[in-house]
Length: 78
Image 1 (cartoon, helix red, strand yellow):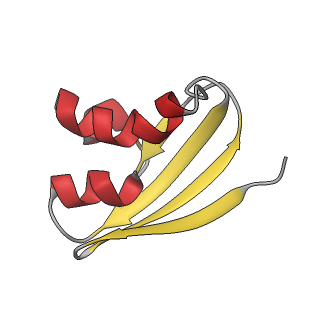
Image 2: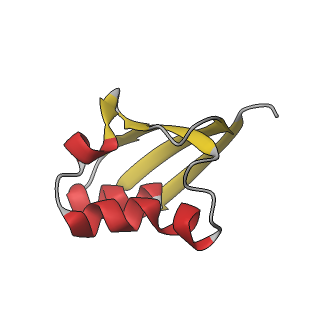
């Protein structure tokens, strides 16, 4: 599978998301997503599409996100 590149937006936050087959690693701005989004609510928002389709451990996700606040960024990634 080739890398899938998509852009997500929420208010003033913009997220560029790259999805490849892998083991479930998620990095946001070159950090582990648990570090970048420290609260359980924000982590839930980021993982929601993957958990709804039961693909949490099937794909690696790399995200570059900027603008807005932490909630807007998490929703742009979603």
